[in-house]
Length: 475
Image (cartoon, rainbow, N blue to C red):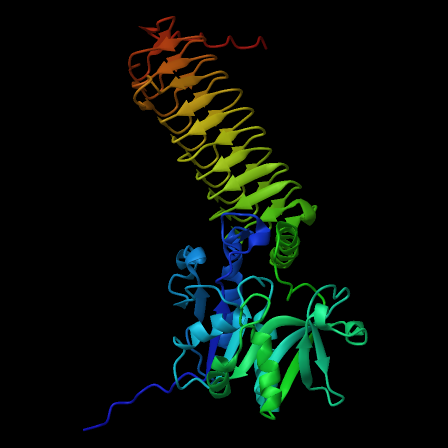
C-alpha cells in the first residue's frame, strides 16, 4: 500500500495587525476599514501579501494563509477579510507585541519565518515585502525590518545602526539623544522574524511603564542580547510605506493610489485629458480607446466599453456602459447602457435603468427602473419611471410617467415605434400600443391601442390623421 503524502508545512507566514480603532481618525469606522478608491485600506495590504506570496511560491517557498489580528472594536473587518485570511482575536489591545503574540497561536508550528505588517500601510507593494524577507534569510537575522530614509523624520522612531550596518536599536524621539535625532532613518513597522526565535522571546516582552503596552520594537534589544543579527532594508521616502493615522493622510494616500491606477489605465489604452480630475475606483474596468474628460467619477463595479466617451463632469456608479457610447455631464447609477447609446448632457439614469443600443437620452431627461429599447429617443425635460419602452419610440419633450399613486408604484408599457407628443402625461398603469401616438398635452389614463391616436385631457382615442402625400414639384 502506498503511504499517503502530506503537504510540507509552509515556510513563510504573514501576520497583519488590524486591531487598532484609530482614534485620530475621529470616526466610528475602524481606521483600517476607511476606503481608498472604493476599497478598505486593509484590502490593499492583503493584496501586497498575496503578490509577495505568489512570488515566493514561484520560487518554491510555500506560504501560509495570512493571520489578521483584530479586536472587538474592529470586528467589522470580517467582511473585508472573508476567505483571504484567518482571524486572531486580541481581546484587549495591549500594543503591537501583544498583537503578534495573539497571532502566533494561529500560525502553524512548522513555519520558519513570520512577516509582520500593519493594516494601515495600504500603499506597500509585494516587492518591498519580498526584499525584507530575502534580507532576513541572507543575514540569518532574528529580525529584519523595513526602514525609510525620511525627508522629514519628525516624531517617528529612529533606526540606530552599528558601524557595520546592523541595527543596534530603535529609539523613540522622546528618548533619543541629539546625535541620534540627526539620523533620518525611521522604522516603517514591517518586520520579518525567525519564527522559532520569535516564539521563544515574545513572552519575555515587558509592559511599558507609561501605558502598560507591549512593544514589538523591544524585541530588537532582546535579539541583540541573544547575539543575533538585526538588519534593516532601507527604502526611499516615496510614500509607499507611510502609515495612515488621520483623514489628511488618508487623502494623501488616495491621491497616490489614484495616480498609480490612472497611469495603469492610460498605459492600457485609456485617454485622460486631465488625469488629476479623474476618479476611478479599484474595481472599475475600462476598454481601450475610451476617452475620459475632466471631472469623471467611475465608482464601484462599473465597466466602460471600448471607444466610449465619458464626461466632462460625469458620475457613473455600479453601472455598465457599452462600446462606442457617449455619456456627458450626467449621473448614471446601477444601470446598463448598451452599445452606441448617448446619455446627456444633464441626464440622470437612476437604479434599474436599461438603455438599449443606439438610444438617445438627452437634456434633463430622467429614467428610473425602466427598460428602453434600441433607438428610443428621450429628450428635453422628461421622466420615465417603472416603464418599458419599445424600440424606435420617440418620447416628446416634457413627457412624464405618473407611476406613483401615493401607495403603490405602477408600470407603463409603450410599444415599438410609438410617438409621444410634447407634454404627454401617462397615468400608470397604462399601455400604449405599437405605432400609437399621443397628442401634445395629452393626459393618458387608459390604454391606447396599437396604431391609434390619444388626445385631450383626459385623453380620448382617435384615428390618427393621415398626412397627404406631398405634391410632386412641377418639372
